[in-house]
Length: 100
Image 1 (tube, rainbow, N blue to C red):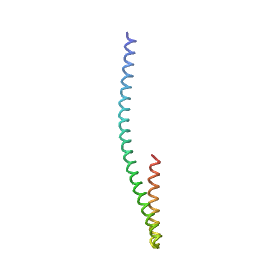
Image 2: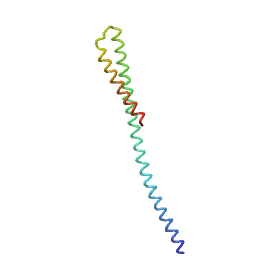
Image 3: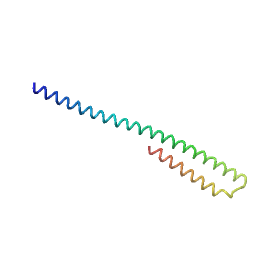
């Protein structure tokens, strides 16, 4: 009977170890799920920022075209710099989204 008791004790020990691992995995899973929710929220925020920047870029391009049509070329350099800044901001957002 001592052999059976030893086997039962070993099985109990293994079951306890498995229960501990399960508890740790559940905790880790919960934390990962929270991270996923946060990252999805961040992605949505960055997507909205990207859309706003693209809209500003389009508006600046339209203004630049209108200025060219009306012969007002004085602000061309300022608009080009503004457009370049928008493009750089959009590129940063796209790089971040691709790194996820």
